[in-house]
Picture 1 (cartoon, rainbow, N blue to C red):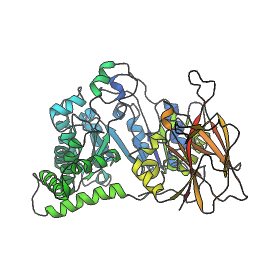
Picture 2 (picture 1 turned 135 degrees about the horizontal axis):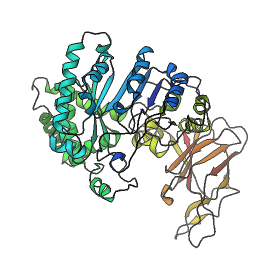
Picture 3 (picture 1 turned 180 degrees about the horizontal axis):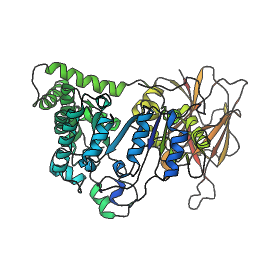
Picture 4 (picture 1 turned 120 degrees about the vertical axis):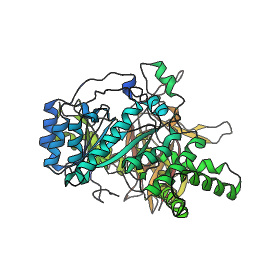
Length: 522
């Protein structure tokens, strides 16, 4: 697993990104129900001048490239040119496609012979479920495309670059199709796909032009459905282990898998449940070696839950280029880093938005998007439980809001109390100053806040004794501020929020509710 490129924090990146994402078009030839194309219209290919900038300034430093985005990459007029440019530079190319255009034998031959890493979006293993998600694609077409890929691989399997060709499936899990996951593993084994990447359904809460779309999708998320997730994944994992197929478990689904068993009575009941589910998954495989398969399944689940904590490396190593020239740090974060139409690449790569993001990740205060990311490993690209697990290792020392060694100075409103007279929280205005005495050995200062006070994001920064800014937002229930080496008998923390709120019948400008303060010791 790749680690941060340098142990010592640096807010700038010396080199170009080693992995880049290019959205060659945001046009699509279908409207799948879980995609923005279902309720919105897009219609542009990446302009030639934008791609020329990427080719001249970024491409030479890359080792891998993803042709991906909200559109269908194979529709792009410059798809083949980008692929050829990468082949000349020995850049490994990945693309994700709905597969419709792979009926073109000439295009399919180029992809296979060039050794592309091809990912097919297949959200079901039966006509009923697949066509529910992708209503403009027939299931029979998908089977035909898989047969074409299989035959093409057999024809060119001995060519040097064709040996690098890799097929995998993308599967967006939802209530309608989760039961198809074991059968999808069988399909992958039949047609030579070596990996299935499972993604959770996202974006249902987005404002959409179609109320019917929201109604159709409102029942599809699986976050509260262990009775569906648990048996499907246990069966699929058993089959995948037997077939040698890499099947990921999204962070948000790991607890659901075990919750399905936790509802059984006692240890014996849980073991019986696991055994039954895994044996069900082996119905299509030879029973010999079942114990080994069971062990592989639980090793994969244990690894998924206990993966070593490390920081996200994407802001130092990745860049995503949208069709309109917008630059993002990855395919998940929606905060724009810049635009190639208006800025030079070097200006963007080490510009203020990129540097701010790197500082945030270095300070262990991920935004909500980063905190629940299922792509990158570790704390800023892992689930909430991994994040909490890291900080659970620290010893905590609470500081009372009324303690003499803490001073809520300029910018803080008077202490608010509960009905019983005990301290509740201190509201801060747009800028606030917090003074407290240092503690020997303390590595973090934790501010406990209440993010539910506000509906939207409120970014902020803080400085300790006038040092480098530390960035955070109110999506987290705690803000962990690295203290570092502090000299003197006082720590001065200056906090600044981007915006304030004025409640009804309240003249105060409110920005941050501090309900507790803690020292964290290693």
